[in-house]
Length: 123
Image (tube, rainbow, N blue to C red; front, top):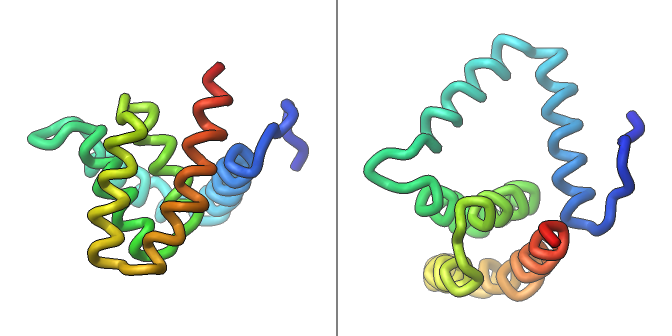
């Protein structure tokens, strides 16, 4: 599948790959995809916790699980919901308290790279 625009960085490429894969899965398994998407949307709706707080939590879990696509996706979610770099890095620090060096390695590489790429894409 060709994309209609030029991918500018590895973060944008990963987001594109995820969306393409999700689209393929949705075509092949529409009922499962529909239920999964409805559940996810319900989980991320504004409630007692803000959407920003929910993305910060999801980012921490993604880092702990070493899920690079979800790390990028939730860094984007954090930024889209107005999280500052300091808030994101603080959440990463809490994750590193539980996940140790593996979590910290994601913070000093992938999270920082994704923040940089996503902020450049907004300009």
